[in-house]
Amino acid sequence: QFIGLVILTGIATVLGFLLFVIPGLILMARWSMASSLLVAEGRGITESMCESWEKTRGSELPIILTVVVLMFLFVVVSVIASLYATQIGFAGNVISRIASAAGNVVSTGIGVAIYGLLTGGQNAAETFK
Image (cartoon, rainbow, N blue to C red; front, top):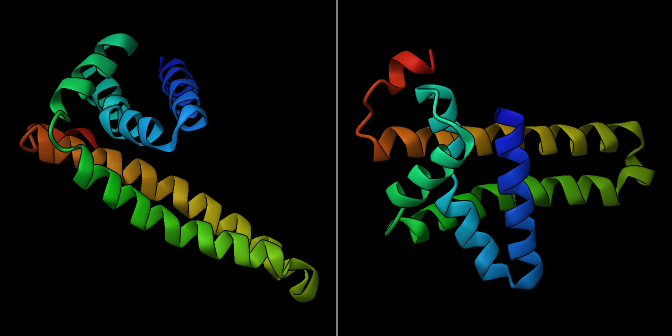
């Protein structure tokens, strides 16, 4: 189910980014806690997406700003390392891949944090131990 959720939200978000950047950011923000709902509460894919949509209503801007600022740092490091990979060799590729992986980890952490904040922390500490 988790893979299905990631595929479904990923496709919709990418389509939102392709149409315009703003719809993609809004979709990303509104579904930011869907994976946490799926894992922590055992909800289905569409139920997790719907509940995430409802719980994040009104919080889109802070979520978007947080994600954009944090991801920007990882993207910049990854791009710079990739651009200079030919000059610094293997280390550039390693740095680029580490920055990319760290961005994925932070993105997941943001979803868990949003889940904890918007559900009042109910069961969050126990679920994600």
